[in-house]
Image 1: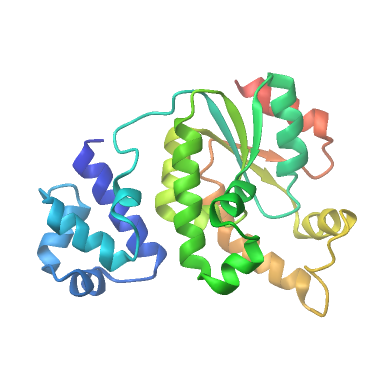
Image 2 (image 1 turned 90 degrees about the vertical axis):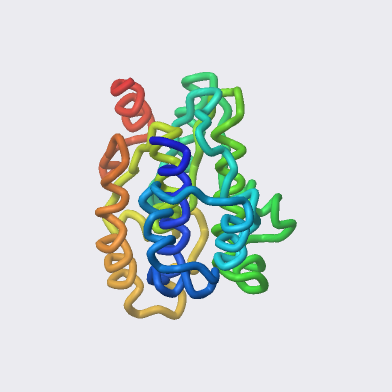
Amino acid sequence: MTLLAELGARIRGQRETRGWTRAQLAQRAGISLRFLADVEHGDGNLSVQRLSEIAQALGMPFGALTADLGSTASGPKIALVGLRGAGKSTIGAALAASLGWAFVEVDARVEDAAGMRLGDLFESLGAGRYRELEHEVLVSLLAAPAPAVLATGGSVVTAPDTWDLLRRRARTVWLRASPESHIARVEAQGDLRPTMGRANALAELNEILLTRSPLYAQAALTVDTDGKGVVDAVETIRAVG
């Protein structure tokens, strides 16, 4: 992919994450619809000024829109994806230990970058700011020279630009489980929030899983963790290479 094509795909991903039409972004950025279409297809020769206007319209720093263009990860990375309770932390830590790699909880790095807990981040700054920080943190992690296993946030696949970045720069693994398993594992860890005061918690989780499953399925490898222990899951991931 050329730099212009990669940049166009990134702009399109950011637009789609916000649920905007191409016409809406063009209007916000003060550019023509035709020009934006060319940019998103990798055919538009952007000036710094035009790119700055698009970044401003998207509500993100200029540097975040252009960071890491055309580069590749310095060290191998494995990124685990899936809903809460999929086993990303437990399996991720065991996998990293077996490989002699670092293990990183991406959301913990987002909290460090924001200087606050995730709940406070969403409440005070909103989901958009979380997405920006998540992307910036992943750009940095994927460019690091040391190999690492990354446990990502459950919704990372719903941010097209970030999900595309992960799939290009890391070996992605979907840890798949049933809704019942997700809830049981989270509650076993002492977190009752998924079901507290929610009579339809299982149905809601099933709906989320149905919506995201086609995106999770884009991962390079799918590991069904129902009935599979941590050791078995690690061996399955390692066996694929």
